[in-house]
Length: 71
Image 1 (spheres, rainbow, N blue to C red):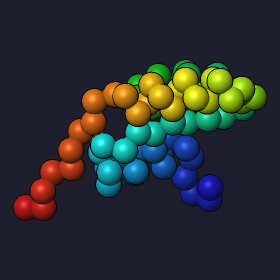
Image 2 (cartoon, one colour):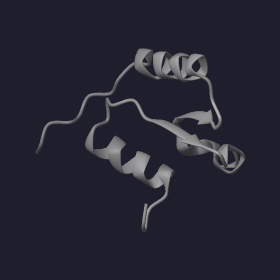
Image 3 (cartoon, one colour):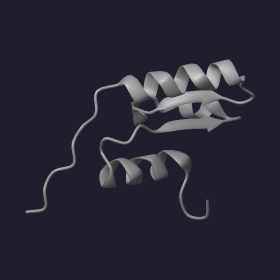
Image 4 (tube, rainbow, N blue to C red):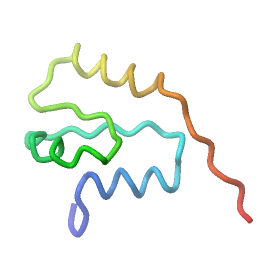
C-alpha cells in the first residue's frame, strides 16, 4: 500500500466506519505486536482456516461503536 501501512489503513477505516471489525494479518506480526496500542485483532501468517475462523468470529462478536451523526 503506497504511502500507508496496515495499521494506518485500519485506523482510517475505523474513523469512517467505527463499527466495522478490523483484522490485521502479516508475516511480520512481531513488528505489529510491538505497537500494541493499535487495537486491532492480529493474525500471523501463515495461518490455518481454523485460526482465521476463530479470529473473524472474535472480531465480529466484539461490541460495535456507532458512527456519530454529522453535525
